[in-house]
Image 1 (spheres, one colour):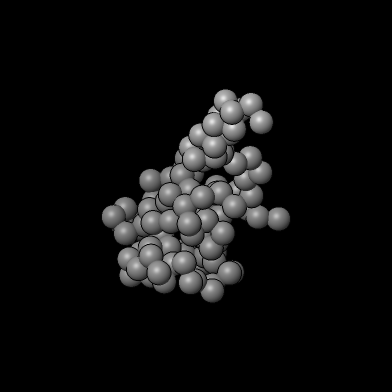
Image 2 (cartoon, rainbow, N blue to C red):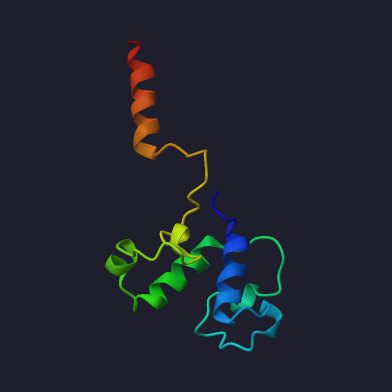
Length: 106
């Protein structure tokens, strides 16, 4: 089962800190996208995981897309989206096609 974004962030912070808890973090808030969320409970933006992956890969989107490091806490969220989301919103193109189909009366 895939971790929630908050669980993944906590695991990433623990690994970065060598097993210590994230309250011990004295990290640079400019370099770590998770620094502002280290003590907050609740929502962790998935975009923070994406930023972490981009900084790890030197800002290269292509390298993030090809990342093979599956044991990294951020790996499932490297596209900036939640992978275990079951509901997907239909695209505007799909909605337009459905409305067009309904208006024809086929």
